[in-house]
Length: 326
Image 1 (tube, rainbow, N blue to C red):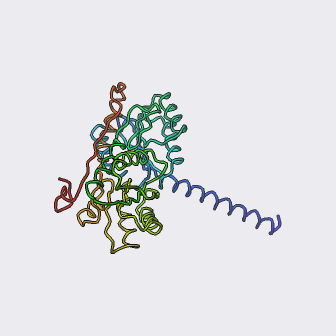
Image 2: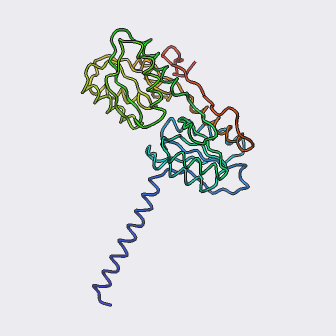
Image 3: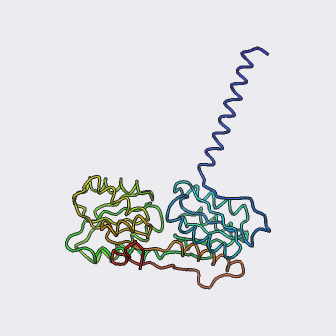
């Protein structure tokens, strides 16, 4: 064999190895999966919790509540999510867990036929599937555990009315335009403010459920519509990002800001007077209740398949000096 041909074969082999390793790394980074080697003797049931985004503070709180309940009942709980919010990747994880024949699945609902079909596939194989945080009632999911998102949107509208007077030009930041829970919150919010002619929505932007995205959304909204004097953020990191975006473009102006969720950064901003109120959800409670519902479903179906976990408007006066809810 000539040296040139040997060199060519070697080069092709190196390129193949690099491509193969790159494919493995890409696959690992596309999905975030926490798992460990377990055997059937190690636990009573194997459940999967499929979140919207892996390292999101809100979903980590759901995971915390779910794992606490799982530990109390000898259950192995696997937490899975795309590294970034992505419905296609979330649905691939759902399909994977159905194929793995786990004993039950907790998953964020996703709009569309593909989700409905996958839930049907799971139920056909005897796997109870429940939605958490976002419901898809037209699917065969066994139950929904989480916030009544339409009512939560109404609470945001009522909080805005309470905290303002005079004309309000509202910039709305949504986590994702196509997320069912965001649509329902917006509908509830609009129903309330439509009864008050002094309040109207000027424009809406998407944050892609990140504080950086929310900061950019607030910046862009103010740049395009300087009349905006009120912001409403519909997902967990939006309030934090909105305050950052305002600081960049209009640090000397006063705004009314209504946020969502009780993550520590939001509570700190309420204490500092930078966020006026937040609509509290209870993600740890969601996780705990979701696991308990799945345990119940191992034995029988439920008569009540909508398990709401409550919402409440939290203001500065509702917090102790250390930033804890009263």
